[in-house]
Length: 169
Image (cartoon, rainbow, N blue to C red; front, top):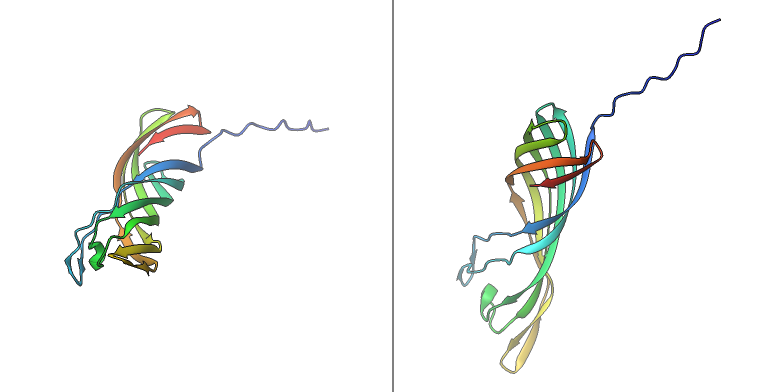
């Protein structure tokens, strides 16, 4: 009779990285309003990012990402071409995109890379009140879509090999 085969242990390998992180988001403006050039800079926002990364090839990784951030900003009187003082205005930004990252392995637990990609995003300004002298009025929500082209460098180290890594990008 044949002896039963012993199950062989398969090597553990990395197939998909899923990550949750903190993001510093700063959106730049360039444009024009009916009142002239846009003299407004969005404040830096702390956000939350979620990503899924897969090895396309030994030295190339693809990363799908989503980043959401929000804050409030104090607009100066006359900003956005509106008379009066808007005060605090709520801002929310979110983006969805894909980055490609040529990757150099520094050992079995460490990697470094450069990244470049493209994404679509949306900036939303919530409803706010404007005080103009004795009068006040409500400005409805505003939003716009944008394209982004992220570029960066990063490095990571596996604290627990093929399971848990610390990363900075």
